[in-house]
Image (cartoon, rainbow, N blue to C red; front, side, top):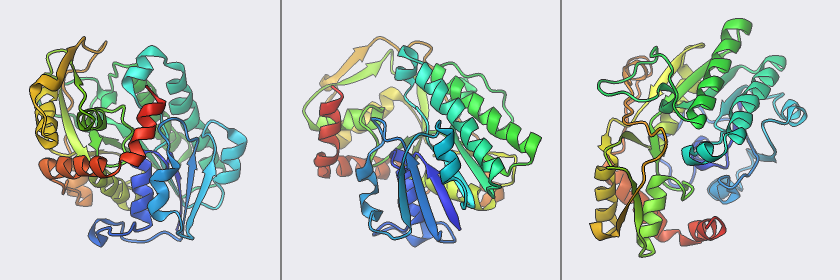
Length: 332
């Protein structure tokens, strides 16, 4: 099998590539059931795409890297042929950036997805896995979203992802393209660009700095280790039903204040390092995914305990300053 991974130099995409190629020290039980014959990474290498994320598998002869934009029809048309599966991670994904400038989110997330779908249809790609987010549902006060819940995005980022989800599903219904969509909760783990809350807080605390806490800190998120997320995507890639949506969650909901407390403890810091800041515009109050469908159909369950995963993540950032220090310096 030949797999094309878009955004494969980013945080989640690179984890997927490392998993597919059996990164050194990887647990075989957490790997896909069938190793690919070849993996192509297509990545624009924007600020959050980092070639160093692929260093653990860089010398694998099955890996091919293509530097380019999913919005470039000629390039995509040249790359897609010969692949059995496309796993589409490439996206602009930072909510705060989408609030200050929405155009790149609409362009990459909507037009880029449409460009890939057209190429997959034209070249008869066997399966198209579209990776999305729980943010497309908006906010939920109680209970959990099922896959049939109406979409109600509240930020330009989540609106662009909702649009791309609907496009992908439309290509299945209109053209018969073998599309499956995944929607995940908040990811954390190694190699995450230090603008997202976990690596931002961890790296700030390791440097002796402060961390910002939005509003009253009561916003609730479900936390999912990136390795569990990628295991879920692999299950959907291999066994998911065409035209379906699958939720991939971590099963651990925390308020932002509770998460902050865990990160402070893991870094040996106190609450005097926390600075309250004005809440984000349109800040969704609570996310919660029902993962019954993927559990019962595909056998998925999160395997990494949050406290263990956070401790492992803090240790990774502590031991890998050469990876994240230049990124923070370049984006101050």
